Amino acid sequence: MSTLIKHLLLPSVLATTSFAQNTSESQSQSLTCDDLSESLAHNASIIQNTTALNLVWLGDEERVAITEDDQTTWKISSYIGPGYNGGMAKYNENETQAVLWLDTGDSDMERLGDIMGLCHSFVPLQNRTTGELAWSREVLERAGEDDGDCKTMLGTECVEALESWYRRQGQAAWNDDQYPPCSAIQNTIPSECEGMISEAVTMDVVRLNTSAEDRIWKWDQGINITSFSDDVIVPTCGDRNLSSSWGNRIYQTTDYDVALNFPIVDIMTFYPTVSSTRGGSSRETHAKAVCLRPENIQEGSRAPRSVKEVLDEHYGPHDDESSAERVLGRGGEAVLALASSIGVGLWLQL
Image (cartoon, rainbow, N blue to C red; front, side, top):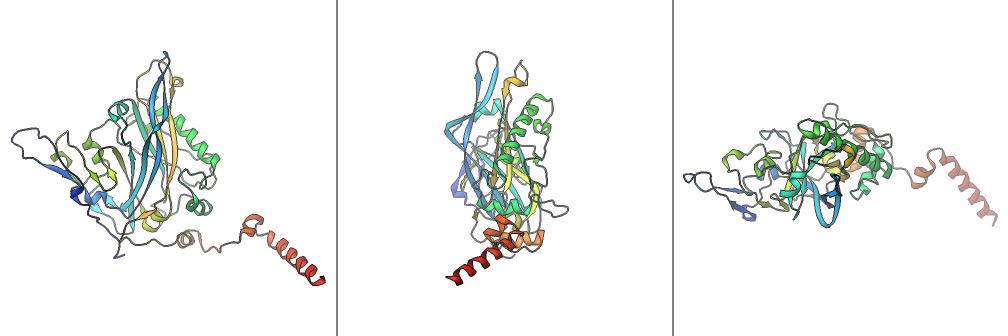
């Protein structure tokens, strides 16, 4: 794996921003992309557009709802890169970690961040103890045809069941007096999700109204962020505008070939954080499932093994079936053979 890029240096010329110091004695400093290069290093990525959200009050009864804002687009992305142990020790080259990003673009996050919360519940691709994959072979085979909404990979009924479950869990994230709020979310495998072997895991995510320092710390624990002031302005590095993005690192590692071939299934749950004197029925939450399969492999990164090779390794050798066999099943082979014999006989009689 000598060709695997472990450190992709992002040019600091993309952004160098200065900030005001707390004391006049302090020298002027800058936070640059070079400062963040190790944690921004990645082997592959995927970026999806998604409809922005807004929180509105309905009538005079303190009812609040999270609704879609069709006039604005947000971006959800996944970057797969080298694994780090708490931002300090590095894992071996075969172990990767993902950082999930939400870029809210031009939305007014000073307002939304104070009244809306977010939880990420993702399905780990792999059990690190056993090495087993979290989905059946059939589900992972369909993943390559999915356009990001998970309906091809998981099926429409499964996606609707997941989103319905996590909308209800959004109520718990708001109603329960727990900290962090996402710890109130319970995960499950809906009966509609055939082929889902492992439950999702809910992350302790960065708050939408937190400081730039806290946001950086959620995905780069290796940087000494305390050396920067409280009002540091974070840069734009490549296609990531860190000033409008919320990144959350998944510290569980995944094998390189698995991570670059298959999607992370992420269910984002948005819930109101404003106070209300009326019960949970007066608050409407929002949940959206996305399938983030890496597509953009960085130049110089090792090309992953094929999907079939990876699946054969985990599930055993598997010959590709013809389309007719997939429809009729193995028992249909005799029917096909009989039909072929009849067809040949009729042709000879002609």
